[in-house]
Image 1: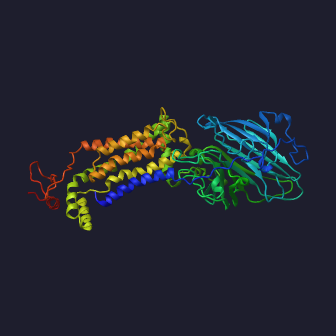
Image 2: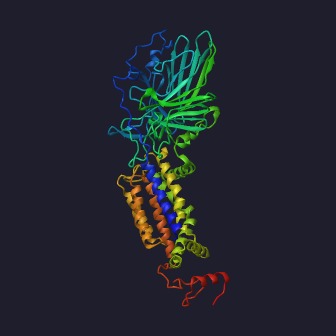
Image 3: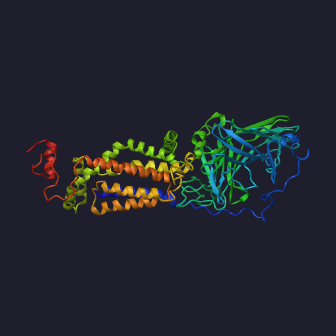
Length: 616
């Protein structure tokens, strides 16, 4: 193999190692979150005391809820007001939704699926999609009216005026306006239909500009990513505006370098966001789960998205949607409607949520596939088909490996043939190297002529790896970002294919399989280089894969075993390659068309016969 071929092969190996190591190790580090507020902080950030019931004419709701309505269902009093809990069942799941009359907002949302649990404070707990300070907020779906002819405090205590199995209505009134917020739970998917109606109770027109808020909180001690955790659960705030996705972690909103996310992670930028234009949605997420607000109708034209730290806190990021100004005539009302997606980021469900004007909301853009989305999406679709057939995501990955191997079998076979021919030509290559060792340009010309005559591609051995590399990277991204694979098991100790193999069985098995593959693969390079490929490459891959997802380990291990079997089959199909050096004037290789016992010919004579077709 000439120097250029060696450099290409070395570049391929190094690029794999550098990509994976960079994706795991070179993190844009996130600074530690500030501790929770203490008693020295402003009263606005501390839990408020229990409030007295609202009296008529005091700025509260003039239509207070009747005792029959208020006491119906799971209603409990807490420090921030009354909490109302609904047991929500939809076509493919269930959840417990808790709303609070403190701002008529979402206080808690946890799913019944045991898969959506994580280890917190030493025990498995259901994941709460409301990522804010326990028992103190701020609560998502809060609505205020800045730059309007009236104001609604962000801690306004709404009254519960209606409650059903799937519907809750809150109201707040002052002398000038009555604000009604409705929440309706969808029967088919994890979507809450929310509407906000402002009634003008004054004698003249009123200007209103509505602001809707979401929040994401970085919990103390939450993983920031590293070698043993390449996919950190970093909360972020997002908005899809002017055709682009803006995403910020807590540190990113504070403008700190790096933004607190790895390239395998959230893809966040740095600095606060304040953009005006066509807006599809705003959201808060933590990699696998999301709360997203999708405006309906034409309300988002000219809307403004803002992402920044909430009240200068270093652990909470605020995402707000500021809608264009409206005028409400005396005695009239204006309603704005929203689809609120609350759940795991499953592509099929996300792609089914419509936005303004009935157009696709493109919620699927929240899944950080990056530039590999063209591969990740079809790969995930194929995996889901295999999983439905087998009921096991690990088996689905094995079937994906078989499918890719079959699809690339033609190029793999050509590559193996090319490697065998390169090894057969090694004596001739050695003679040329010795003959033109002082003339590199002439040596390269002669080598290219030799390869051309024998129809050998010196880069053919690198082709299978070049084909597989995008598949590896796409699977790496898919495992780290697709909710469908979250905490998906295989068998035995492999109970999460998105996490590293905690007993390192798969990485070590991969290293052994790669060693076996290298042992039976023809090596047309020098002995020292062949030895390096045989030992260093398996060791390097094993070291890299120790902390990468076991699903990726499984794919590369199965692919390596299949490649080894393919190579063994190819080796059986032909005579063992000649590896010894030929004497001067001969190649040690039988010329094409010669019968056994005929004299051996040199390379020039063989080349002449190939072109003229003459026999001795």
